Image 1: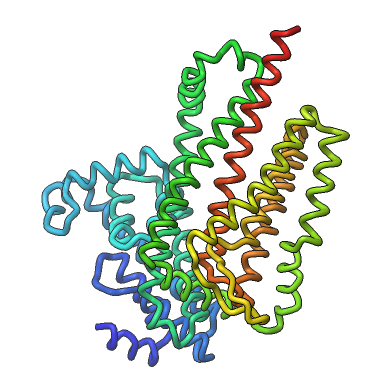
Image 2 (image 1 turned 180 degrees about the vertical axis):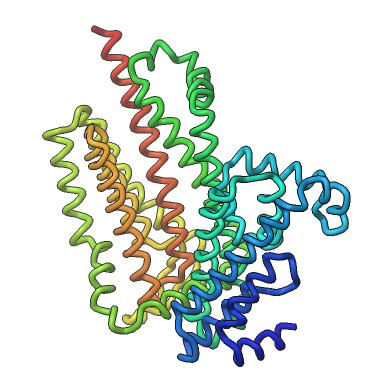
Length: 433
C-alpha cells in the first residue's frame, strides 16, 4: 500500500497530497502522515514546492474533516447508535466524545489531528454532537494546516533520511501533542475551577493561617514553586531511569539530526556567541550584579545573600557530583579531554544563575510585563546555550535536557526554601514587636 502511494505521489504530487489526508479523515485506510512526510522529501529534492504542498495537504484535510462533520450531522445520533458499533463508533463512544468536547472545549479538535486513531473520528463526532459549524470550522481548519505544515516540513528537513526516522518522529510528535494537551487541560481546569483550587490550597494551609495571614501572595508563590519542583523531580527520576536503561540513543540521534539540518556551518559564529552566554565572563558579573542588587534593594539582605551563594556554589557542587555519579562520557572535545557530561554543566549553571538572579530582581517588581520579559529572556538564553552545545557536538541532546531538568529541581527547591525562611523570619519579627 505504501509503495503504491509513494509511486502515485511521485507521479501526481499535489493531487495525492490533497487526497491522502482527506481520505484518511473519512476513516479510510490511508497513512496521510507518511504521504505528507514523503511529499516533504520531494520538496527537499526540488520536485515540489513547499508552500503549495502544505496548502494542498491542508486543504485536503479541511475538506475531509468537513465531509466527516456533515456525514455525522446528517446521519445523526440514532444512526450511529444503531450501526456505529460495527465501525467502533457505538453509543458509549459517542457519549464519551460528547463529554470530552463539553468538558474541555472545542480547541481539542485542533489537537486531535496529531493523535492517531482520534483524528479519524473527530469530524464525525463533531457533527453528531451538533457543534456549531462555524466554531468547528475555525478549530478544524487551523489544525488541518498545522498538521500538514508539520509533516511536510519534517519531511523536507530530514530529506532522504525520512524513511529512517519517520517512526521515531511520529512517536515524539505524539509525546509533544500529549504534553500540549495536558497543559491545555490543566489551564482549562484552572480557569473553570479557580475558586475551588484556591479554596483547596487555602484549606491546606489552614493550620498555619496565623503565620501566613497577611502573606497570601507569598503562599501562592510557594505552592506554585512546589508544584514546579515536584513535576521536575518526577521528570528527573524518569531521566535517571532512562539513563540507566540506556534509552537516550533515539532521542539523541533524531534531535542532533534536526538541529544540524536546521543550522549549517554559516551559523558557527552566532553559535559561538550563544556558547559564550554560559561562560564565567558572563555569569560571574551577573552574580556580582545580583549581589549588589541585594545589598542596595533587597529586603532580607543576609538571607538572600546566603541563598545566592548556596544556589551558585552548592549548584556547582551538585552538578559536579551528578556527573561523577553517572560517568557518562560525552563527545571528544577539541583539546582531547573527555569530560563527564551528564547532566550538561553549561545548561545547568546557566539556568540556576540566571533563574535565581531573575527571581531576586523581579520578586518585588509590580509590573507584570517586566516579570514576563525577564522570565522570557532567561528561557531564551538557556535554550540558546543548549542549542550551541548540540550544534558543536560538545554534548548530546539528552545531556542538555538533563541539565535543564536537574537545574530546575535545584532552582525551584532553593526558591521554596528561601520563601519559607523569609516567612518565618518575618513572622518572628512581627511577634517580637
